Length: 98
Length: 371
Image (cartoon, rainbow over all chains, first blue to last red; front, side):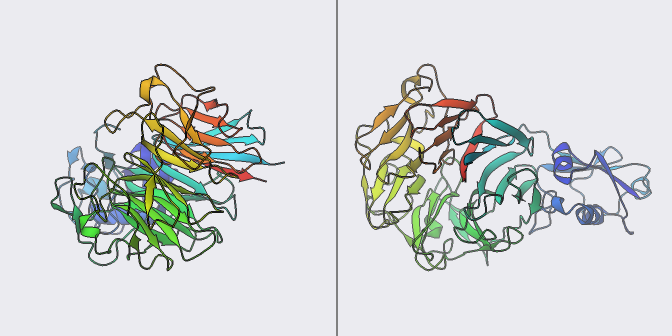
């Protein structure tokens, strides 16, 4: 079970709480986590990754084990503690006003 | 009993304002989608319970929503707006080529005949259509790929397609307006397009006969006169009586002919409303007085409507989609401000009262007449 922390705006859209739990088949990567997230919450499609390019939106950031992994490959395996659900995968909206 | 439902999009959510035909006492619901920028909401003229909403975010992109129960509940629909083919470039502010990039939906225009069909005007400028109630969107690419497309440029608010008018008589005729490209007309349901900007003069375009490049802010039509359009341009209020083939200026005695919205009275096709704004850098009413101007002669002669509106120290703006007209026997006029007020007049503008005073900045106002 993968734990994902959503930013407040996406919780509104998904009608979810702060943390959601997902089943994700190995290998667990940012891509596979977001695929599973969008599968469970279709309203989030296109909000984290661009519809066309599938790239992370510029004002969205990913954190794992308190480290910013936003600029790592979306296909890079996430740490074991994320894959086993001991630590959550964080999706954060960049702080830039609004 | 008849009544009205006012749909208000703001920087931080949507609000729905309901009243009976007296339009005196209001029930307010919201915020819907609290925290999100709600660019535009508009109801189907065929099925008033069907409302489409555009929700945009610099962080999380574009999402689209639909209500089938008059705004009580919402479902998220499709938000994939893909340009057809290789999008190419338009002009950037400095005249250099810039790639076409989808940013947001500015305006939604539901079909006059089918509640499942809706048009979307987007930034960077293009027109999309859905025939499945918003589930999927297809670009009507003949507009963006018009031979002038590489000369279109963004206005201060971005290169947006903000106005869509569906001809109530000829189902194949559509008008759109783009800032800053101009007005365009299709006579084949959106497949091909013609720029309709003759007669427009824009200070920032040295070529007096420029086919495109004009910063049109809003256009309006009375359904009984589909050949007559009124336009609020960056500067100048304009009128055409031949479906855009030639425009002439009708600014007349306005204190400023800069502004954003323009509307036509529901029952009087020669009665037009604008909200003069001081200038393109001073986006507030002249002299700190919030005045709607009404012409009963199709332009040129304008009267200030002030009863119930602040007449001192008022420095709000009224954005291009933030004015609407209902079609009750005594025509109602509504507008919202960047200061969060939504004003209503139940007597064609003779007197005004705020419905609400303290919403987030208002992006758009639409009204549904419920019978």
